[in-house]
Length: 262
Image (tube, helix red, strand yellow):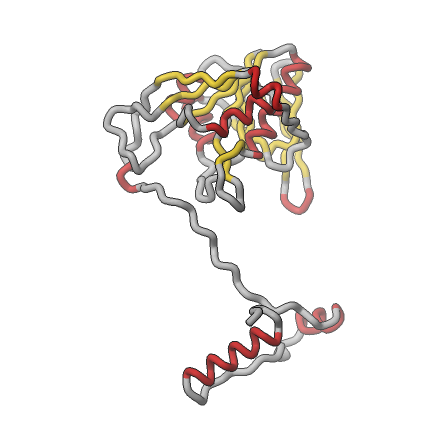
């Protein structure tokens, strides 16, 4: 059985530094465990920049090598847009029995559509939000993550593409010795591009504003009563006065509830 794992470059939530994607790391660990049980081979693929140092992290997580489809040399590509990776990946993945990938990348505004586009191009079924996986008799048994702690088991015929949930039942293990032994191989390829490329541009992601909220000081019984009645929850409406006086009222409220420290 031939297994492929699609990996992407993640981003640290605080520093923004490039690193391995936690979703794809879970998919890689799941694929390696399955390969040992099925005596299968695992190929790790990435579409993007082969010089990104974050790809070495996947070597430390167990990949013997990472094959990078270099899309930067695509003729006529714009510098401010990403080349379409779905087409080259689908062409490279033809003939695989099982493809695993994370649910979505960690670039803040990623759509999570790449697994669906690759599966559609290959004409194979897709199972999303997988938390564990087993293969028997050319069929994959997948346990899916569902809202509110629920789980669902589904079966799918191989070949198939499985998108792994971040809460998958795996524990990636990082080893520096494996990083030194593995290799990252760049393969030149071309992307046909998309007719909608001109409508997209790349820029650094910005943090969303955090809404200030005063800490709830009422008892649980009082909160339950307020949820079933229309009584006022306090506060005041300032209509009269100058803008300075209104600003002073707001500042006093923020200081009272310790939402500002000045």
